Image 1: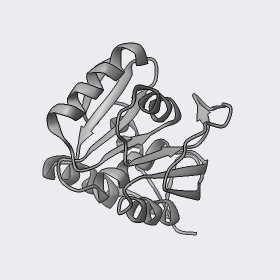
Image 2: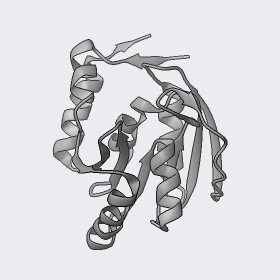
Image 3: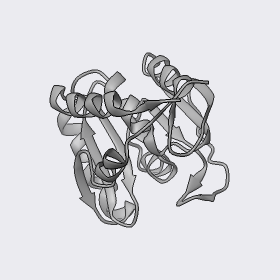
Image 4: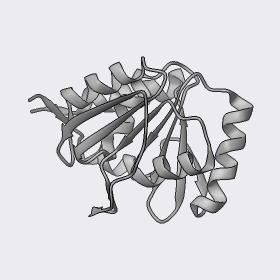
Length: 171
């Protein structure tokens, strides 16, 4: 199974938000996210992470693709009931992006509504989600203990993320 591993410097870069950080707890950040989605009307909304996937569902924010590993801060959490038109299951070990996960994200973004359950870790999967999303789509992921990061899939963001991909080692 082919996978891609980020360079050390890019792992450091990824600890800082790739997009706009909405600070606070889900109770504070979800209303802001809802307004943002209503105002910008993105062609696609993708959430990466269990808390953000569950909270958007609870808040009634329309999400096209949810990516989750049923872990929060490396601890297994109870299974989340998320019903979607299509459900995928992929394997993606910690610290890498597998070709399988990447291809599945690309395919799932063609669906109106999908969920991907990741066996392993979904932390780096915002990268393929950004690259495969149409321009102006938004990708939302949690920033541990800080809040939510909202990334707009713009040509500039895609360029930065593609450069990171080019530096990754293939395994």
